Length: 244
Image (cartoon, rainbow, N blue to C red; front, side, top):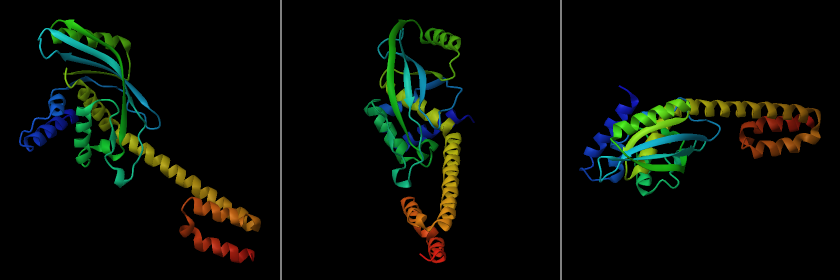
């Protein structure tokens, strides 16, 4: 079963468990269809700008369609501590998006997105209304976007109000798609940094063994990196050998 379908079923199931309490953001989430998503995943070590095309039928007219074009900026992810798990900054996407983010936060075990958090910044470029059937408008938008050959473009059909939640659902989908690779990149970076630090410490021990005047600098290095207890025995063995 495709991930998108599975996610939608999970949302509906949760909604039914909530005594059918009406949430505007759930209305938007459940009525948002992702027509196409970026072929590129979100960047691990930098920000990613996604170009979105949101098509919405106006609430009061079946023949008027709103098309919104803009950028969504996903800030680079970072591995967070368990105490900060689930912190989501939705920027200026609105109150309904904030409520949606709160639901995501409470269900961090279900959504990989919350294993490292993310922030959103919205930049609107253009909004226009077309008098036509929504299927015809969508077909034209798909043709126009295809001609751009943009690997970071996304087309979605959503609701006119609250339409910003539709963008939030898009970003949830993108981060779920990118999360595994992003986390692997971050973990590899962490391993590389730890190895580099260990190599630097070994070199500092070697230099201090040849020049006792470097022992104090070695001690400072260990304390600054929170590794004093790890290297304490080795350090004092060096001090004893140096006769200092």
